[in-house]
Picture (cartoon, rainbow, N blue to C red):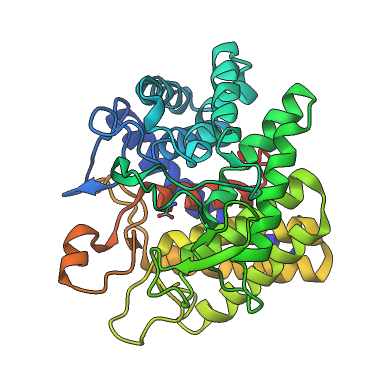
Length: 389
Ligand code: GLY
């Protein structure tokens, strides 16, 4: 154990216990749901209304991590149940999208790796093939989303998003499993495109990039969930931090670790200014202030992995910054009481520019991936070495 972990051991243990105390109850209460947020403190359920929703794998993944971290069988039961509920999404092929990695890595891949379940293995490889098939051979990238509104022009056909870096570990896994590197080659092409077209020299990122579909060249940057197309959407940066760290872990290509460090340094520099509580967008106007806890949680996961890859004093630096972010979240964003199903309250789906957008996506709400990445970060800090991605 490094000195940063030693110094923080008490806080890590106390926080893990608080998480387990709460989740051991919510795990049973929400067993038959695929939660994405809470309404009046109670988990919603996407399992029937929108089984293809991109966040539907996080609840199951969180349950697997809690099971591994506590050996409490109740968590395992809920994890397996959540994968069953997710099967509904497989009934609609056209509903599947680039985010299938977010959905089935923490569920079916995790199930197979933990229990050896054959059905989970087959499902995960099928889903890896779905992701693989979204690759644009000429352009060298994985397409984001599907044709919105089934429009004849298919206007978003050549778009990529930074978020997809968290989906491509499904392709690395498939190649590792079947001993054939064709899946990983697609992941590598996509990650290289992200370094070229999404990550800016200052470590901030373009959320959405439109490409030339013959050459793959960047045609246009579009505003996504951040303030503007030139701003710095914090969760987008966190996808780059953790996503690039994961590409490095799976491939050992130094350029991915360098990209993870560049984006992590940007994230740290920006969120230090607000006492380690990340804003939704680091380049947004000073007022109004909108936070996004999930960005910090995901970036912290990436920083912990960077720390492990680097080791030594540089590693201690990133571990310490990850803990600074998590401690600030623990103090200001978390809810450990039984009257609220979510753990992390202050997340934000997208930067709201006006009342209309605010009505569609309210800031400072529970979002299941905020909880997931918090649990994952604490699971790592507890010394568990199961890397779910
Ligand atoms: N992947 C979508 C989001 O970050 O909200």
